[in-house]
Length: 315
Image 1 (cartoon, rainbow, N blue to C red):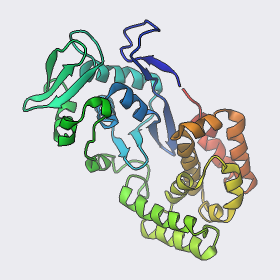
Image 2 (image 1 turned 90 degrees about the vertical axis):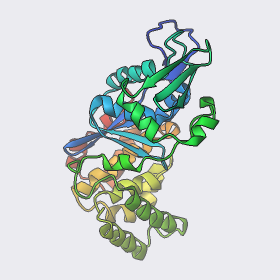
Image 3 (image 1 turned 180 degrees about the vertical axis):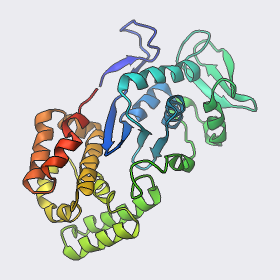
Image 4 (image 1 turned 120 degrees about the horizontal axis):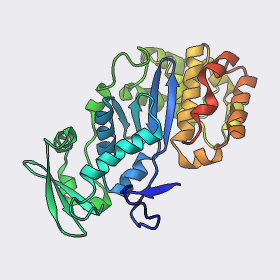
């Protein structure tokens, strides 16, 4: 894991206040892009700030929409952003909501009051108000502040309420009518899928038909392969492609579904640091895709259009 100083204006390599460098994964979905912030949770821990606050700040600054999946701990911004751009925007969040204005130390806590937020420095003891006029994020934090946050030191991290309204912020124009942001439907399909998986019925034709009908009922026949990939595969993915060939073939009947399967595999690999380390070079990634091609699960022109190797590179 590559680390950088929390206050990047300090160039001292021995500065003890470190955070991970932002790792992003850009997923192409035909005419649209999504940027997954792979290690935002780790950055939130280093800054002692909720990752929901951080991604909301980034979305506001980039004039984009965000997606938070609390179950999978996944943070997504709609659009194509490189890590350098996002890191520079993150510096703005750190300067305004983390660093002490007096001593520039990052050991600060936040509290919520009538005017806005109150920041207290644990190093020098100074306090300051961060009002709504300072940034639009202040209003968001105040609206979603829970009493638990006032009782818990930021070093143990905030227990904040979920943000269902953020799901609705994704533009209805994004990707397609079958896509991509209805968590309730996701959970219904995944729940059925997990039951079939635990019962070892994923290659049973009756169970496969039941899964297909559920995907049709929820209007997610395109998205289903992505959800299957994210919930099916482990580090034994090469063996699992063989084992679940029948299931995968039924859900990869057209190019749209094949794109979806590739997206799901990319998200599965990039959202898990251990898995990403295992499949961190082009040769290993290519082995997966050759296996998919060999099994006639993905057409050759889909591979070329999707540009898979680029999807998996670390910045």
